[in-house]
Image 1 (tube, rainbow, N blue to C red):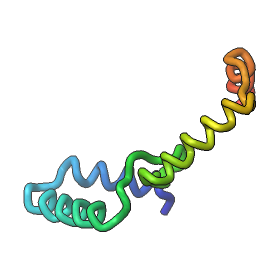
Image 2 (image 1 turned 90 degrees about the vertical axis):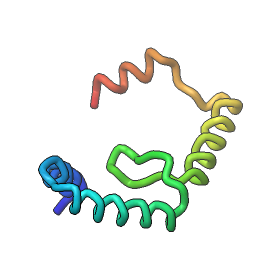
Image 3 (image 1 turned 90 degrees about the horizontal axis):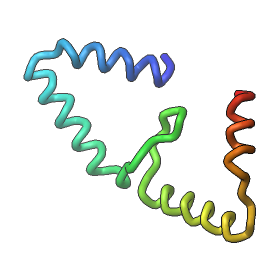
Amino acid sequence: MLEIQLRNEIVSIISIADARILSVVHAMLKSYYESEPEIVGFTPDGKPISKTELFYMVEKSRKEGLQGKVRSLDDALAEIKNW
């Protein structure tokens, strides 16, 4: 099952779950995220991004910007139209 399908199925199940199931799921997720590096976001394909990874991505983008490795808004919008 694809990750997006799993997410959708979990949301469907949680929307009808009773308090006991919600407590179990909450405890499991809380335990998982407390034992993992701090997750601050997700990539478009659903992979978690840690605080350290986000910092690296921002720093890399900042350096590329300082080096002039940027594109104009018009270029970005033109590219989006071709998606």
